Image 1 (cartoon, rainbow, N blue to C red):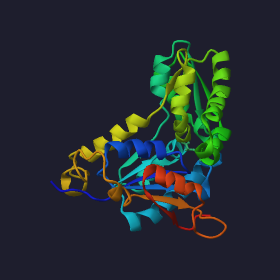
Image 2: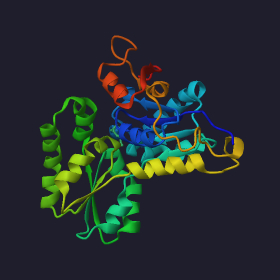
Image 3: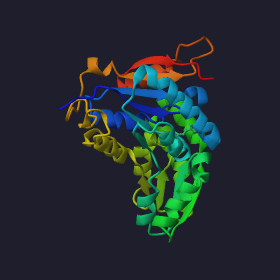
Length: 290
Ligand code: DGL
C-alpha cells in the first residue's frame, strides 16, 4: 500500500475551524495538518459570494505550491455555502470537504416546527439553507439569525473569557429562542462550536442543538480510506492507517498559519500562540493577504 504523506488543509476566516481540526486530529494523529486562519479577510460573513470566491481561490492557489494538500477542508459554513461548487470546478483534482449547517437533522426532528439556524449574514441568506429546510422539513419554519457579535466574541475574546461570561452569552440567545417556541437550533457557523457544551447544557431539555463536527471527521476519514484509482496511488489517501494520537514532536510538524500579520509586520499577534499551542501546532504567518 502506498502511503500519502501530504497534509490535509483546514481553512477558516479565523479560529472557527479549530474545533473541526482538533476533533479530526485527535482521531487521526498520523495525518499531517495545515490549519490556515485567513484573518486578513475576517469576517467572511459580511462579504459577498463573489468576493469570497475570489478570496478562497487565490488563497488556495498560493497554498498549493508550498504545501501540496491532499484534501482541503473548508471549515467555515459561510465559505462552504458560498464557494465550494466554484472551488471544486477551479481545482477539479483536489477533494474538498465542506461544512454545511446541520439543517437536515434539525428540521427532521423538530416537533414544534420552529427551527433556528444561527450563522453569519452570508450563510443565512444563501438559498441553499432554505432549500435544505424545504426539502427535509416542509412542516418547519426556519428562522435564519445572523450573529456577527457572537463570531467576534469567539474570535477576539473567547480565549480569555471565563465560564460565567460564556454562559451569559449563550443564555442571551437561548432565552429569545425559548420564548419563540423554538425546539431546534443549528449552530451554523463553525466559530460557535467553541460554545457547543455551553449551548447543550443550557438548552436542555426543551431545545436540541445541532452541529456537524463528527460528521466532518467521518467524511474526511472516508475520503482517506476510499480505494479510488483517481487518487494518487489508487490506494486511498491515508498516511498511516488507524493512526490516532501522534507524539508531540510529530504534532509540531503540523502548521498553524495566519494571514495578515500585524502592523509591526509579519509576526502573528500574541493570541495566535494560544491557539497554535491549543492544537499543539507550530505557528507562522502566511502570505501578504491584505
Ligand atoms: N467561521 C465562519 C463560518 O462558519 C464565519 C465567520 C466569519 O464571519 O468570518 O461561517
